[in-house]
Length: 84
Image 1 (spheres, rainbow, N blue to C red):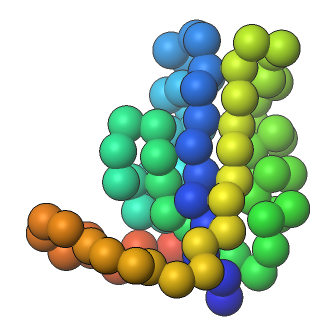
Image 2 (image 1 turned 180 degrees about the horizontal axis):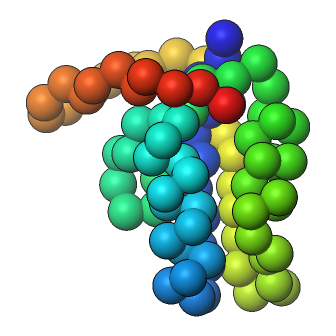
Image 3 (image 1 turned 120 degrees about the vertical axis):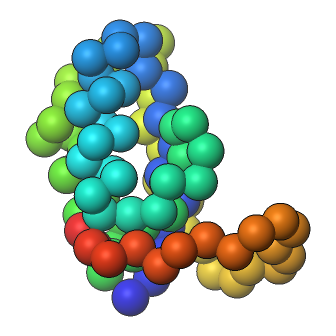
């Protein structure tokens, strides 16, 4: 399974809350709008997120594939229990 970094910038709190809740159940919450998720491909993440919220022209959902962790500074993170 590949690891992906999911970042979002949504204008409405209702949308942010819905995406945050879904991603917390399926990945590792790194920062306010940033999650690490494991899945077979990025398209599954995109389809999953777009099934939850409509994104307007001034909002964004971004998915980046993580190939290799170069450095980790600070405390270790927990391993997520669920996957998309």
